[in-house]
Length: 280
Image 1 (cartoon, helix red, strand yellow):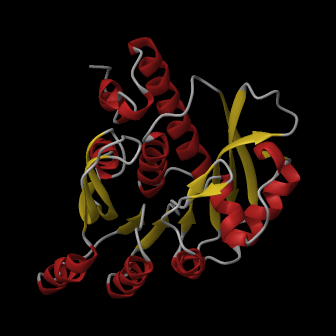
Image 2 (cartoon, one colour):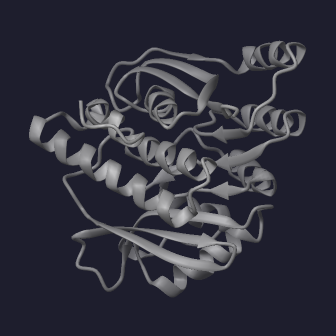
């Protein structure tokens, strides 16, 4: 018996339920030890008008050096938002120095637009980072950017188009596994949201009812459940189903509580269910 460890490379945000503050408790609830490597420290996420941010780039390598000197090892490395080309290069070196399963969530944009902080060089380097990935979890915007193809009109896409996109992304990775998240299929009336799974050539969908509007941290919660469940030995389809079901419960509860969108998901209510317990 040995507990797994995951190096989680992402920002740490104090309020707004996103990034490490969402992923750490969820992955921990799934019985994997989380070891954060901060890329930035924020008081609140950038969906708030006023926020404090401390870029951690200059301290990341000193931080990593300490891990190396202590002879630490990890079962997996997971990446989230990276704030500069320098950070992507640091992550590249980190992966080479800490051999492990690599899961990349290429947090680059949404709704057809790349985040303002992302430069052309960063997009190029993120594509290069794919070569180390065992699993990649882009949304449709990010999938298009990784492939250098136009975003489909209205964000609506066919299953055959998704299959081609996922296969092309998978071909750039070492693991051949891709989950394209939060897509609207062309035969749907917009009332559903789907996740397209490409697992070394095997294709599946996980579709859920669309509940409420966008909320901060939704992708982080989905990623945490799916990645940890897959690392725990569940197949990618079951891991994706578990993630979609968990997020749907959280969104539904957020709607009942009438939480502002930028307060994120009240996932705390359902953490105990992830490891087989009852709702607290």
